[in-house]
Amino acid sequence: MNTLAATQLVAAREVRAKLRDRTFLLSTLIFLLAAAAATTLPSLLSGGPATVAATPEISAQLRAAGLEVREVPDDTAAERAVRDGDTDAAVVAGPTVLARDQAPADVVSALSVEPPVRLLNPAPAEPPGAFLVPFVFAFVFLLTSQTFGVQIAQSIIEEKQTRIVEILVAAVSVRALLLGKMIAGTVLALGQIALVALVTVVGLRLFGDSELLDLLGPAIGWFLPYFLLGFVLIAALWAAAGALVSRLEDIGTVAMPVQLVVMIPFFGVVFLSDNAFAMQVLSYVPFSAPTAMPLRLFTGDAAGWEPPLSLALLLVTALAVLAAGARVYEGSLLRTNGNTSLRTAWRERETVG
Image (cartoon, rainbow, N blue to C red; front, side, top):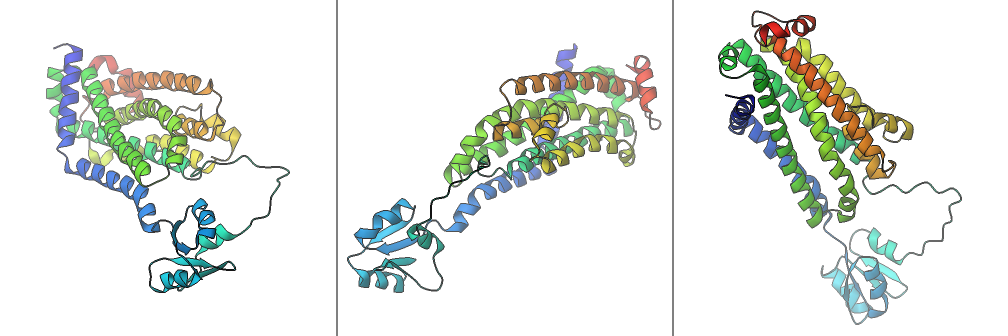
């Protein structure tokens, strides 16, 4: 069996096993429900614009403010509509706003006259939801890369602990085994994110802020290739880390370095998102580029030539880390009698590969 066929066989096996895993299916369902709730509940709970009873003379001004207006012939009919509960408020001569138990702020605002404002040193306008975008990009990349990365490491350790890895490498090459696990993890991660993204887009289009979705479009488009390469980068580290130990109980001894290279960029992007220089630096650091650069594209701070350059650097780094991780994986996979040091795995690759 050649390497390509063996890789496909391993990847298909890993995908089938994960699709039968109740934990994976439950987590996917939870993500979908969370995305649906985040995009639909705010609109449903807000109850929509206020319904106002008004005479034809004032109704045009209220409609221009986005309010739902019910035209009535006179002030008496307007007051009756509020008392009977047919409308939330009414506007009568004066103008005076009538309501049942509390002042309707949106109606008052629609009738208010704001003085003109001239800013001498205007700050750049932030798009809607800008405070939330850096957290969302960073959180999606952090959660997905950590979840699937840990699962790849655990799968490798379980195969070593049960000694089934010795049977597997007798049928397929060590390299095909690694590539198959990496491909399966990447496909599952992208599939899960694609489902969540689809639910989010539909929710925003139907119930949410379509203007925000239009602004997010270019950033999301760039986030996908960044996520793909960033995930490969992190998954290669987890695969190498998992191959260094022989028991699931020992995964903590090798997990900390991998967790740090993911967590530090996460907090860097979240807490430094308003620092232009820091974000520019982070958008070229491979471990933070998948979240920093899409955010800069969303806010309009990145020049047109920056994303391709940053993506090229991430690609080179991902390939280098993948090659190094494969070497460590090959040098430690068949060492099932205890933990293997990184130096030993790197040096002894040829004797066990």
